[in-house]
Image (cartoon, rainbow, N blue to C red; front, side, top):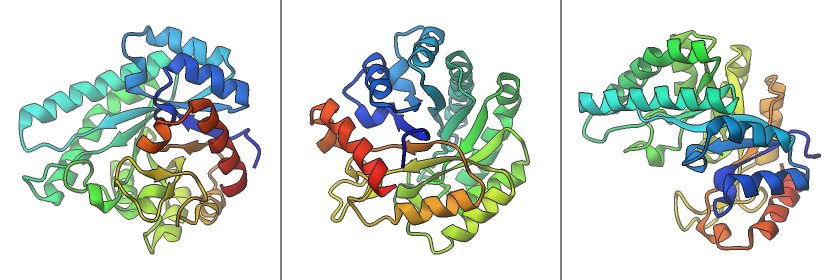
Length: 271
C-alpha cells in the first residue's frame, strides 16, 4: 500500500511533541494525523491546526471524548462539559470528527451505562452539529467493559448510532477491539449501508500480550487478520484514512525515528 491514506495517531509516537510528530510524519510521506488531546496542552489550538496543514497533513480526528457513564450525576454533568470542550477543540483544530471512548461505571449495570452513553451523546449533538464535528462511537474490547466502555461490539455501536439517527453520529472501527467478533463482517457491512462507518484504526494483537492496554503490536506482528478486515471495510464503502494507533511502552522506549520507519514498513506490507 502507498501512504496516501495513511494516518498516524500522535499517541503512537508518544515521546514526540506534536510539532516533532508533524515534521517527521510529513517528511516520511504520511498524509494524515489524528491528534490526542494531551498533545494540545498549553498550545494555541488554532495555530496547531495551521501548523499541521502547513506540513500537508490532513487532521483526521481528535481523540478523545466520551466517558459519559457515571452513577454520580455530577460526574455525568462534568463529562458533558468535557465533551463540549472537546467539540470546541476539534473546531479550533480544524477537524470534523471526535472519537468517543464511551465509558462505563462498574457500580451500575452495563445497561444503565449504555443508557447514559446514549443520553450523553444525544445531549451534545446540537453543539457538534453547530461546530460541524461528528461524534464517532468506538466499540472497545470486552476487557474494557468495567470502566472504559459499555459499548463492546460493533452491533452495539451500530444499534446506538441508528437509534440516535443523526448525521453527526457515526462509528469508528478499531481492529484491536473487534477482530475476535464472529459477526464483524456482517456488522461492518451494516455500518457501511447506513453511512455510519467513518473511521478505521489499525494495529495488531501480540501473542502473548503482556499488557492489555500498553502492548499493542505492529500490523503483521500478531494474530489480527488486518488485511481481511480492511477488505471488509473497503467493501462497505469506506474510503477514508487507515489510522495507525499503537499503545506500546516497548516501542515508546525506542528511537522514535526508527520506530516511525517500522510503522511505515508494516503499513505497506501488512495492512
